[in-house]
Amino acid sequence: MAECSDENRVKYATGTLEGPALTWWNTHVQTLGLETANSIPWENFTRMLHEEYCPRDEIRKLEEEFWVHKMVGSEIEKYCTRFHELCKLCPAMVTPEYKKIEQFISGLPEQIQSMVTASDHTTIQPLIRLAHKLTDQAVAQGKLPKRGEHLKPQEPKRKWEPNNNRILSPQQPTQHRPTPAKVFTATQPNNQDKGGYRGNNPKCNNCSYHHHGPC
Image (cartoon, rainbow, N blue to C red; front, side, top):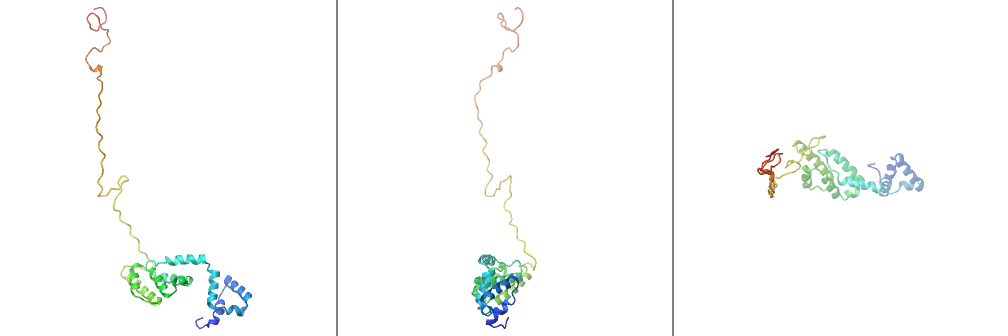
């Protein structure tokens, strides 16, 4: 295909189709004729393929993936492989070349991102080679994990410990409830507390003492 002339690109490309794709192309050949079908401009042919097998809703999903595509750990090879795949599937996001460069840099980890940006390359290939080199250096310096390993995120330290379902800070002293004031009320004296006879004998009218029988 590298030495294929422009007028034969469609002819040789369609010769590699299989399954449903080959059936789809044979339908066009039956409609247009073999010679006319093979003479379709390459840009039109690729557009026909995208319309048939890459509907807009699927392209939108790929574009969303492309926006958040990031390099994980030091897996620069996996990052670049998927980056190239998404470039082919979403060409509008990486055209012209500076968009491709910006998209590539945005997915690099912060340990090497600034150095790649400072290189000021205007084409993607030297930028990718630099990213590989800087990734290896970052791994050697312990800034990035080795291939197949990932850095564990550090858990944030807790500043305050819970106490009885409440969290107290040193700036907020513990508030004490005021002691309720004592209330005094006047009471009536009880006659039983006074002195006097408390027995069961009847009071005598003569002597004023309590006893049974005649006085």
